[in-house]
Length: 357
Image 1 (cartoon, helix red, strand yellow):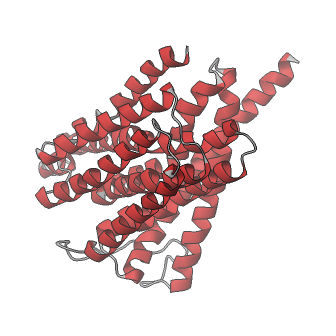
Image 2: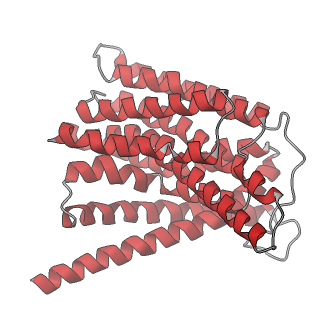
């Protein structure tokens, strides 16, 4: 029995690593395709991140929420969708932004190392430090300003009960529709000329890839990301108890990070490619989707009633967003301060212990 248990544990860990690699490689192909898709649709560079990439990576999670809240046989089963609607924004506002900041710090360190060995220029570290000009900061701050009041209303509705509460879910869909329209209409305002894109991986020798190839690569990678992400979450659910973690801790602490893994991977890839604006735009756009679409579904099909753990996650998310918003508005957002956002997730984990106890 011990050998069988050990073998099963190894299988879960191997599958976890395989899924992570599959998600990363799929995201490499996805970000490559979505940039070409943005050019085909003639949307601004920032809208590629806030709308196209965010919609693509957040859609699978929204589908999972839809299935949970509409087909759950019990209130507990339906509340899985409610937990996902709260956990997603938390992971994005803390872990995703934190990983982006950490990647920028790593990039700066590498740039400094190149300068020391004479293989780079003194400007390298300074460029790696910058997160954008004043316009970029205003744009990012505007996204957080959109997100915060919607999220506050979302949390407040979890504390009250009244007859027409479910119908308010439609307002969340409307809020995202307005955000979507604003991003598409103003996506190219004040942006620089489009830079040359890397060749489409499906047609590496073509200067301008065929539209069908862009579409196929985008859809195919999304399918792989969807199934690999779901399998990744299942492996975490199995590994959690093996590590002595309760099902509640696994669901509230590890699963949100797993479900937001595509956005985190996209951020890593774009930062590595020197496209920090797209990385940050992808996260802020995904946060808007997570704040509206899953919330609307939850309000329509569940009681949308929060317990202590969900309220704590909401409080930490709001604290993280206020921290980022104040830093952006003061034009003091640096890679180190962005990386510090991950500390809010640590605070969430520490605060979760007495709540679950």
